[in-house]
Amino acid sequence: MPTPTLTSILRQMDYFLFFLYIILFLFLVRYLDKKNIIRINIGLASAAFVLKVSMACLYGYIFQKYYGGDDTWMYHYQSLEETAFLKSDPLHFLHSLINPTAYTRYMMTTWWQELEYASLIKLLAVLNVFSGGSYYVNAVLFSMLTFWGAYFYYRLLVSVFPKGRTIFLLVFFFFIPLIFWTSGIRKDGLILLSTGMFFYSFYLFLGNKSRKLLLVSLFALLGVALNRNFVALSMVPLALAWAISSAGGVKPWKAFIFVYALSLVLVFISPLIGPVNIPAAFVQRQSDFLALQGGSYVELDRLEANPVSFIKLLPQALNHVFLRPYPGENNGALYVFSALETWFVMLVFLLFLLFPLPHTKRPLFHACFWALIFFALTNYLFIGYTIPFLGAIVRYRIIYESILLAVVAVHVNWEKLLPKRIYNKFI
Image (cartoon, rainbow, N blue to C red; front, side, top):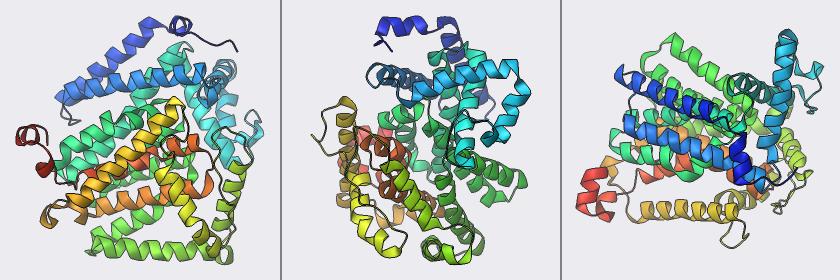
């Protein structure tokens, strides 16, 4: 593939569709705002969407020019084949989604992996019908979907703690690493969408017990499973603990510690009590990643399917997922960018330790915050135990890192750190 130039890439874009869809989406946001269906400043929402589309285009440009296309362009080219397939034989197109192993285009190792892969490619194939097959027009359409993931997280946290509105807005709509990694045409943006939808709808369900909201929560959970099933698995115990705390009047910390302690026991005795050996699944997932080749490989000891092995590997896993890449570890622009991101998050955590909110003002006592913290930490561990590539670690963890950033930042006593005029205006 010849190395693209910015001019050649711009020529690939359908300018009319590109700007038409941006304008239509901004009108949609304005309409929903006027009808009080959504609650966000229209100017900020518009700026956030334009930033997201810009990051989506930058993502495509960087990975085509400097990384040979990477997965994001591979998905695009495969989706063009699927679009032709959709037009020529739509019934077979749908059947191969229901039974992906009967259609060996993707060559994955399990039925579920086939389904995960097929669902993304076929979504892009449908978008191609509206984009004319342009990657960059698809970037706009994809952003129109994934934008709502950030909105759901924002609305959830503002509903729980309105005083944190500015921080939640900055983290979920304007934190550049989150916007960049979840705007590319990959699964990450869809995971942001489906997990955000789950958390917000489940929070509303616990408040009014609406069956419709429960169905929305289950639909969102299915969406998570179709993108990364281990993320969906991590949401089951938090939903149970959250429900126990909400319905039974149990203090959140008691409910979550009990449920997660019980879950940990069930994980390691799963080979004895059920058809799924969860520790062995972790070992297999790590083994699959170790078998891959990549320039960002970092040393990761092999797991074994027993508690002792997991305990021994814990420090290494935590180091990889919380602290890597180190400053100066790699001179590539994305690695430098990621190192700055890591240390920025560490700085905010340090500010929390030095300047915490007074005990009586902390929102941490709400079960929603506990659910988000346990969700983020569980997936941090999943990533740290199984993924030996810095590039994948940075991309996989960004949603969970942003959640922790929002939770920690809202517990910093910014009144002590910022000039009074700035604090009163923005916080």
